[in-house]
Length: 196
Image 1: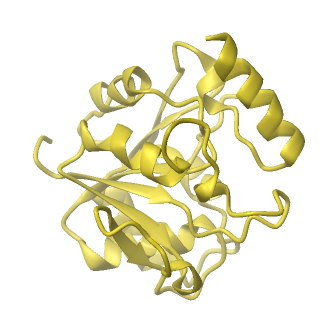
Image 2 (image 1 turned 180 degrees about the vertical axis):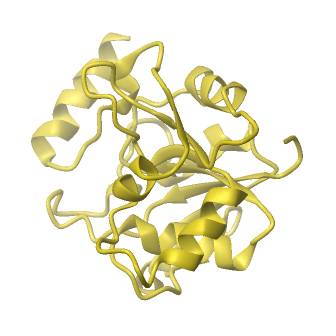
């Protein structure tokens, strides 16, 4: 399974609840979309930042990006657009609003890839459901998604993974799945990061 994993940072959302672009927030020295891309680059052959067309101005040219091309809502757009561009690849999909993520957990997910599964996804112990924006979508799963997208009742990637052959992995530290959608969550995470 080596040599076929690309990375995708989902940063194309409108960040309505946050009130500003979540990918441009700095928890560390760089904007979060770039920090996340740097993390994935150690585990993936190539890494792309997924954006909508209105975000392209001012993007750092040192990073590769893909623009949404599909007609579905939410993160499914970025995932399908990446698959359409590079259909022979599996993708490590990581949302830009998971600032607690670190390389050790990226490595944990990569090491849990297993032949015969359509995806491998992090999950919480108390609520064992796949986290589709912190998962490796295997080529087989993406092919099934692309073929069935018009028949799906929902564009929710979690529902698709629940109904697919998805391997759940429980992170060593569940805090890595804390996301920041609202300003109050952002401040909480910044406090946690300062304590570590």
